[in-house]
Image (tube, rainbow, N blue to C red; front, side, top):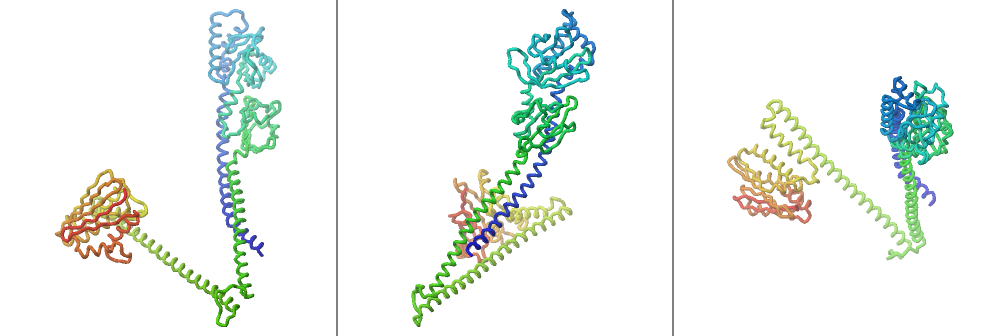
Length: 591
């Protein structure tokens, strides 16, 4: 029974705590998967656009020179004669210098170009070379390119070769990508040697993911150059990369295609350059793309495991606790049945067994009655709370309805009389006061806002008592940003006006002084009204701390209580008055 109870509790609590974690984890995973697919599409398009621009920039370097040599027979003829004559005239020397400057500009304009050659067939295999001008093939350590050019047929206008070469005999050989462009006249060729390490850095600059591998292969799929991530994958340079990825060569390219290499899963994006038969490949590890979704799933699994452990501990604790209570109750019943339960007294007949059963029964009845009483008290408290909440909601609904009605009336007045109508100004002031009063009473406001609200309130009172009220303020501008509780002055002003103006001939002057006392602000509200009799003043002072069910002096009493509750240790209001001379209400608040 205990084991079944434990299993039941564990399943129940595990379902309650783990189900929200599983649902949230699944929803977040689905959402992240959708976002990842969108981001992957945009990243693939970015790779295509950036890679296209980069490859076009690389492959079109030297196009101007090739176009010039292919379209101008005079230039090609001059270049051919320069390479096939021992002596040169002035014009040919000028052409040589100009062509050398052009080749140097092509090389110096891009850091990934190592050198540029121009060759026309001649007996000594002399060619133009950046850095050396006219050079014989026998005098340079780089000789492979010429034999490679001669081995290609006339039908091939342009091709790319990956090779190792040296510009000078004293430097170490390094990998390079060589672009050949055949010249139509005199069977010449333009050769551009690209530094493979710099090209790798250019590919690294367009990575969208930290582990993205970017490769460029020739038409046979052999690797020409790549970034460091692709180099770390150790592709066989002598075999087709497509075959190593278990793919067939495609002239149309591929878009977000899943592939595998050495047990790892990748997403492949590929596009081609038909002119040179090049393939641009981007391989992104699947775990990099779906890393966020995997993290969410891992967190969800971890949350389920933690929930399971906590449910095990909690179920174990509840099982032991509940069954220990049951065992104690059974033990008490057993002791009562056997007559061994200790008692403080005996019954009239002296029977211990009856006293023991009566004791247990009395405890049970007493507990039941007490629980019923507590339940009724709780229900009564909940009912009072509900009624209070309904009353508070009603108090909120009525002002909002009143505020909306005022706005509607204001619109009708503006339509009939314009924006400067006195009734419109009055409604505007009343609306501002109502909006201010409906604000969050728990949050303080600046003294500037409180003063503005009071001025609007007095403007409304002046409308009711024209020429009878004058409000004077005395304060420093430095204190206007101090924070005070909302509706601090209005009840006190209302009290002064209500009890000081009794006839149209009365003239009321209200002076509000605000003094900066360093760490506190001292407020004085003075009026020259009718004043208060001594006995009535005593009654008002006593009512400040009276119960809330009193129906007189509500505004003054509420302000007093708000001060004492909002500022612990505050003494509240101090009221001084002389009949026939006026009244002064003072209070202080922390600055």
